[in-house]
Amino acid sequence: MAKNNKMIGLAATAALLVVAVVAGTYPSWKSTPVVSGEYTGSAKGMGGDVTVTLTIEDNHITDVTAEGKDETKGLGDKAVAKLAAAMKEGATVDVETVSGATISSNATIEAAKAALTSAGLKAEDLK
Image (cartoon, rainbow, N blue to C red; front, side, top):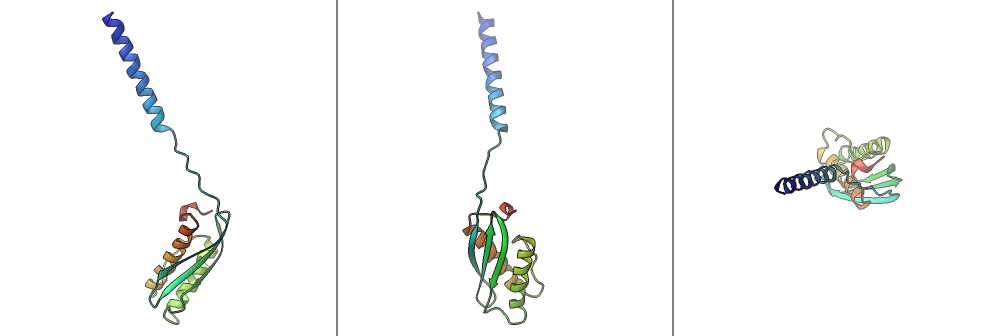
């Protein structure tokens, strides 16, 4: 009888172990929403706010417009435009800053990420 109880206890422990292992390896499925539309974000630049509008179609950036009207003329304003073009060309918000215009560059990237957030997306959700 004691041997039988030991076997039942051992079998129950083994079954619980199998359930725990299987449950722990089951993938958690998280679906990324499919987003289309225009989304705008802004961030503080060198001279004022930088605003970026992303046009997204099925999680793909198709157009980027950026405005930093109070950024340093000839440097910050050019960086804002250059980064918007790079984002559109690469269909990403993960672009490198422009040397000499770090604050304007970072503001442009932050504004683009804010636009993505307003769309309910992260950079890795883009196609």
